[in-house]
Each structure stands twice: as C-alpha cells, then as structure tokens.
Amino acid sequence: MAGHLPISSGSLTVDDESIFEPHPDRGLVFQQHTLFPWKSVLENIAFGLKMKGIAKQKRIEQAQKMIDLVGLKGFEHKFPAELSGGMQQRVEIARVLINQPRILLMDEPFGALDAQTRLKMQMLLLEIWQEIQTSVLFITHDIDEALFLADRVLIMSHRPGRIIEEIPLKFERPRDVELVTSSEFTAIKKHCIQTLKEATQQEELSRLNPLGLGKKSQIKEYE
Image (cartoon, rainbow, N blue to C red; front, side):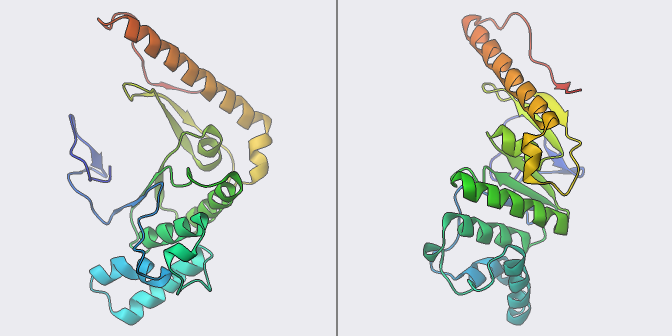
C-alpha cells in the first residue's frame, strides 16, 4: 500500500485510486526509525515540509505543534542518537503526520520496544488518533496490541499470506489499559489464538498435500 514495491498480481486501490508509487497521502512508519542522524528532532520533523517548499518559519511552527502532540517538548534540538527508542519512534510518527497523510501505515512500529515503552506508545497513538482521526493500517504480531488499538482486526495466515478472518471490535473509545483484562477482550483474544492455531494446522496439512486438495481457507467474519 505504501507503493514502494510493485504489485505481483491483481490491483490495489485506495479511495478508488490505483497505487503505483509512494505518495504523501500514505504515511509510513517502520519498526526501526529512519531518521536522519545528522538532523535535530525539529529538522527531522520539518523535513517533509522543506521538500514541499514551505517557508522556514511556517514549517518550524508546524513542526513545533507536532513535537507538542507527541510529547517531545524540550527535545527539539536533540539528535536521534541522544534519544531513547520510544522517543525516536515519537519523532518518526511526528515526521510522518506533519505531511497530513490520508492513511497512516504502521509496520510493527513498537515491535523493538520493551513492554513498558510499548504500552506508553500505544496509549500515545490512541491519543494522537483521537486528535487527528486519520485512518491507520497497523501491522502487528501481538494479539493484545491489535485488539487494544483497532476498530477492526484482519487475521492473516502464514504461508501463503491470506486474510482468513475479519473481526469488528466494538470496544468504546477512548480506550483504557484496563480493557485488556475485561472478559470480552479475553474471549476475542482466545478466539484469535484458536483461529491462528487452526490456520497453522491447515498449513501443515497443505505441505503434506502437494496437489492442494482438500479444504481451502475462506475469509469469515467473527460474530
């Protein structure tokens, strides 16, 4: 969806527009930050606006708003090497959001963080989303993270990667960390684990059946 790799087959559209290449409308946050090590926090965040030809004073003002949004006030002139992993990801998120993307693509952005920092970043992301209301496509291997953040979860099989189930989530917003201990949350989590387990077993059977005979995976919706 980011447009960095060619589509192997079929087509991919967002808002009825085909995707062939990267575009500012689709912001991408990776697991590891891609900040310029020789630029300060402020300069990294404002870089996209600089490439658009935005006047220096205006891009500084907008970058400062992003810095406030992600909770990095006072770190404007620090360099990436002087920041913790969580703070680096805050800068990365701010650098993407300053371009006002229509869709925010996040590829396991908190996967490299320790548990405590990951929870803080999840809460921060929820706060940011409440503020900007941008659509987010979030990739994760963590079931708790998926259920805590999302309005809709798509479960994928391993190989080949196929969407095997769609689960709409009706948890109220704003979300609180206590949600993860609720009975409804736990029930859906157990269902996800079972679905992934069955998909793995089906994959093992497929490897033993080179002709691909037998039951095929189908997309289903959780009820």
